Length: 299
Image 1 (tube, rainbow, N blue to C red):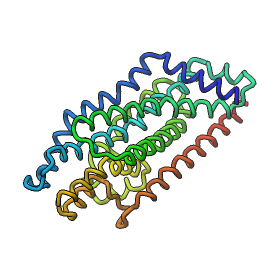
Image 2 (cartoon, rainbow, N blue to C red):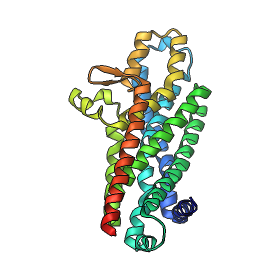
Image 3 (cartoon, helix red, strand yellow):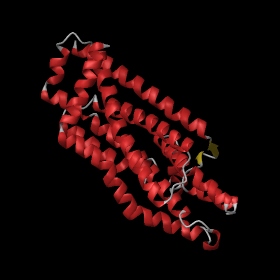
Image 4 (cartoon, rainbow, N blue to C red):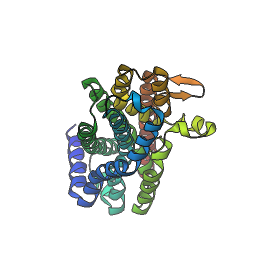
C-alpha cells in the first residue's frame, strides 16, 4: 500500500504540476458550460416553448429550470469521459519520456504501476468533474432551482460511475499508445465524437431508428440518461403540479432521453445503473488483462 500511495501522489503531483494539462482540463467544463448556455440553451428553450402552451406556464422559471437541467446533464456527460482521457495522458508521457522504464527498474510490481495510473487518473477527474457539477449547481440556482437533496446526491453518484467508466476506457486505450501524437489524436476523436454518440449534444430520440438501436448498446447512452433524469426529475414533477397534462410531460421526457428504449422495451433506471457498473467492471478487467500481457512481454 505504501508503494501504491507513493505512485498515486506522484502521478497526481505531476498532473497538477503540468500547468497546461491542468488548466486545460479545468477550463474545459467552464468553456463547455458557456457554449451550451450561449448556443444550445436558446435552441432547447425554443423547442419547449413550442411544445408547451404558454397559458399552462404559471412559473416563469420552470422552462429555464428544465433547460438548465438538460444543459448541466449534457456538460457532465461529456466532461466525465473527455477529462478522463486528458488526465490519463501521464501514462503515455511516461512512455515517451522514458520514465516508465525507470519505474520498471524499481521493486514496484507492474500491476501496482497500472493500478496507480488508474486511481490517480480517477481522482484527478473526479476533482475536476465535481467542480463542474458545482458550477452547474450555481447556474441552476441562477436560472431556476428545482432539485431536491436526493437529486443532488444521485447526480454525485452518476458522476462517480461515469468518471470510473471514462477512466477505465481511457486506461484501456492509452495503455496501448506509444507517442504523444497518438494520444492527441485519440483525445481529439473522443472530444469531438463522444458528445454525439452519448446523446449529450442532440437527444437520441432525434436519430433514426437504426442508429438509435446501435447507440442503445453503448454504456455512455445510459449514463447520459441517468444524469438527465436526476437533473430534471423535480422540474417535471413541478410541471405535473401546475396541471400540465401528464401525456405532454411524458412526451417531453421521452424526447429528452429521460425515457430510453432498448429496441422496443423501456429501460428502467436500475437497469441503467447495472449496465454502467458492469461496463466499468468489464473494461477494467480488460485493462488489467492487457497490462498483464504487456508486462510478460516486457519481462
